[in-house]
Length: 143
Image (cartoon, helix red, strand yellow):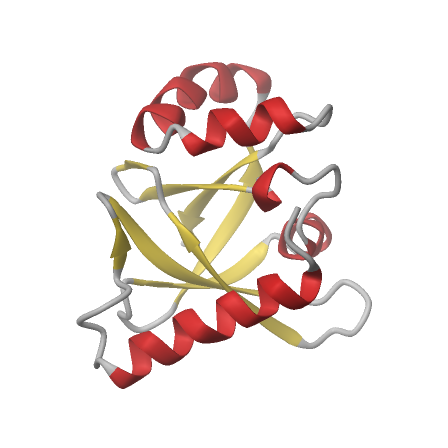
């Protein structure tokens, strides 16, 4: 599994590529759009941002995957949004907007997981690496 340091480096690199290219490079991975998700740290209260992909989009609802590459631990951003589900999200470099996050219910996950793995088969491989069920997170605009 990638180390925390490696994940932070990849995230910083992604940010830098987006900034340097004016968003021309790094706005998507394959057919999945990239988003910058900003959560409030559950311990620090500080804002933390991470770059993720959106394998499934249903109207205004975006689905992200808390895979952490198949690690046995949940990613920190996922733990943060469990503590505070109101997040900021920038889709493909657009201005950030407020969203509310929730972990997919078993019914939602059963419906969405095949779509997620169809968009990127690596997610199925990540699930095979770990005993934890990799959460799907639905992000919906706040009203």
